[in-house]
Image 1 (cartoon, rainbow, N blue to C red):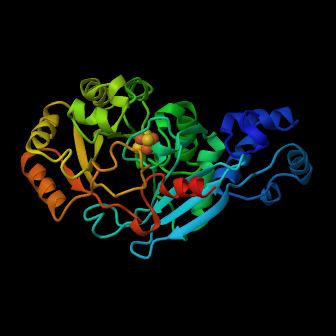
Image 2 (cartoon, rainbow, N blue to C red):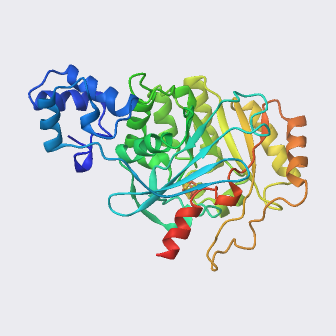
Length: 364
Ligand code: SF4
């Protein structure tokens, strides 16, 4: 067993086959375990009724199905968004956000879409200046079991099936690459969680080697890049990763990904009033079309808790009036790729990345 604490959640099919063989059973018992854990999402080994009692007893002596503990759950009265704060074995906390569709958000897309935003790390080392998680520092990577546990537990709190997964919660997925990709393999398996990799999005601030690795490995999950500015001086101010991999390198990696996978890249662009909303920004964004097949999501900045000594506390402002709508309209007129205005989900429950966890940490 490679997953910690003898938890069966987090083991892939081959590891479960190996476990079955090591415990004196045939390999196909591992496949049965896989289906019980991820497809049927049982909460105990005793629920695995097509497995003999003898083998279940052997399993129970050495392993368990360990659920993630829900510390808090908040439901938005505005849009039905549900935010979970999960407590891990070592008492650290991570959060996930379950986002239902709204008419405004999903005009032409599948109206039944139910998206779970999943965390990949406790805290985050990327230190983006607009992000509450970034202010926490970094604690550790999540295990595969902890990543999948978020999906399994969140699924118990809705009568509907989770249809989409976005790795946009706490943490930078590319810095926990192996565990994230192993999770995606289990999520995408028809006998596992059963969500097509085409409905899974991995979001990165721009770890270019990992973007290229994803392309080289032929991964089917979609790629989103947190862009927020094409101006190196602005991007470096709000995203320290830009010192390591500047905008040219990032766009080069996006091009590489597109050429290798033929999958369109999604660029995420948080709109900060007066910072990344100028004529020059529109011109730079317009030119993306000649470089990479993409779509652009504009997200109005949602004010967050920032430490009093943050140098950007006064600089990062949400849109004033209808400035973001005007910005989007201009882009839509000038760009030959899709430009969408996205809303912030669960504003009344601190729906933006990292906020609830930060408040909990502060309380402690
Ligand atoms: S935006 Fe994402 S990558 Fe940046 S600090 Fe927050 S969690 Fe980390």
